[in-house]
Each structure stands twice: as structure tokens, then as C-alpha cells.
Length: 173
Image (cartoon, rainbow, N blue to C red; front, side, top):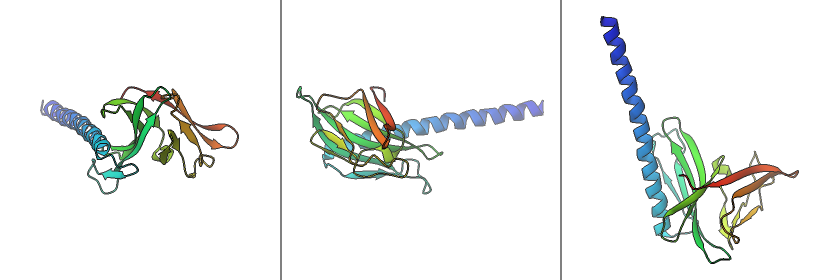
């Protein structure tokens, strides 16, 4: 009987801490959303904000960078933000190009595989990659146009022979 009580207590503790971590991730995600909106309100193009939501010194920091406004040929305007969100105690990151309307309301995002695949700048309605990285040596100079509207997908070349990464637009956050 004592053994059953010990196992029951252990399971209770494990379940409690499992929900606690999910709750911490949820709180961090809410902080991330607030930080992205802060960057929009500050309205400083190219400024990168860093946050340590996981409160560990051995993890990368969450990084947010406001890129600016794109205007489509139908005169719709959207604000674009680079977002690299470090999640939980695993120190794993989620990288996205996040789209907002002019009232700073979330519209959608492009999930990219790593922070190295976030664009460097926005010029004349084009996301622009200014440099290559170790995993992608044909990225430099790539321009993604938003003139026709929000693309369904974004292709970032990595090699000279039509290979690269395809990132799809999603409205889910």
C-alpha cells in the first residue's frame, strides 16, 4: 500500500510540473506577442529587440525586428516583423516573418526553419537577404516581392541549381 501511495505522489508531481511548463510556455508566448506589438508601436525600422523569456543564460535570446510596411498594388498595407522566439527549458527556437495590419492586429505569418532564414531588410516592398550562411550559399540578393499582395509561399534559394527552402503563409499563430 505504501508503494502505491508513493507512485501516486510521484505521478501527481510529474503531472503538476508538466502543466506548469506548458503554462510557462503560454505565458512566454503572451509576452512574445506583447513584445512584437511594442516593436510595431515604437515604429523603428531595423531595430532589434532581445528578450530572455526562458530566464537562462545558456539559451539564445528571443529576438524581434520590425522590418517596415509593404504596400500592395491594391493599396493594402501590412507591417512585417522578424520573430525568433526561444521556447521553454529546451532552448529551442521558432522563427517567423509575422504580418500585421496597420492597426497592429495579427494577420498571419511565414514559419521559417531557423533564424538564419529570416530576411535582413525590407526595401521597396521586397524582403531582402543581404548575406549567405553556411547552410545556404545562394541566399544573398534574394528578394521577395509583396507588391502583388501576401504571397502564398516564399522561396529562398540555397544552391545554384533550384534548391532551397519554401515557406508557406499561415493565419494560425
